[in-house]
Length: 280
Image 1 (spheres, rainbow, N blue to C red):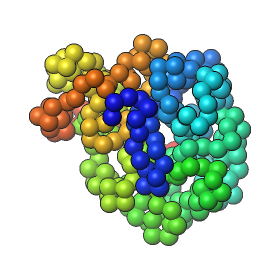
Image 2 (image 1 turned 180 degrees about the vertical axis):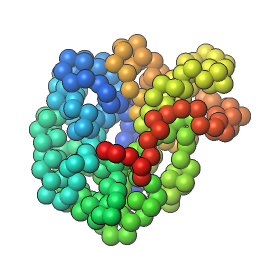
Image 3 (image 1 turned 90 degrees about the horizontal axis):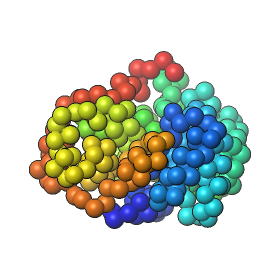
C-alpha cells in the first residue's frame, strides 16, 4: 500500500480503498459536510457512515460538494438494529440512498447481529434483502459488522452470497483472533472500527515509545499497524490536521519486531461492547 487510493480486493472482486474515513459521532450539518470535504481533499476515497449516526445527509452533501466523480468514491453505510427484516431493510436502504443523494452504495453492512431467540432468523431475513439489492446491482458488495464466528456461521449456512466484509472493533490489545481467523477462511475482509481504541491508544506509553522511533504519532502507528495486519482501518476525526495526519502512513513500515510487540499487547482500552451482550 502506497497511498489512500490503493485498494484491497474483496471476495467478489470489488476493489476497496485501503483506509476509510469514519464518521461515527460526527454531527450532521456543517461539521459532517466540511469534514467529508476535507477528507476527500486530503486524498481519501472511502467514506464510511451509517443510518444510526444520523449524519447521512451531511455526509452526502460533503460528497456532492467535493465534485469528485461518484465512480471514484467508495461509500459505505449500515442498517441499524431496529430496521432488520426483509421488507424493512428494503425500505431503509431506499431512505439511506435518498439521504446520501446517491444512486447506489459500494458497500452495505448489517450494523450488529440480531441476538436472542430469533436472532438467527432476523439476520437471515435481513441478509436475503441484502442479496436482493446486491443482485439488482444497487450495492456493489454486502457485508456485516460486529459479527462473531457463530453469527457468521449461521448466516453463511443459508446464504447465496458470502459476506465480503466484517467490520469489527480492532486495535492494539483487541485483535479478535477467533473472528479474524474465521473470516480468513471465507476471504472476508476485516475492517477495523475504532483503530485508535476510542482514543485510549493515544496515551499508552509502549505505543508512544514505538511511534517515537518512527517519528510518527500513535494514531499513525495504529493505522499503519492495521494495514500491515491486512485489515482496513477506519479512523475518524473532524479536525483538518488530524484528518490529513491519519492518511499520512505510507512513508514508513513497522518492523517485524515492533509488529510482534504491538500484537502481543494485552487489553489496554476500547469500547467494551460485546455483540452478544448489549442493550441496543
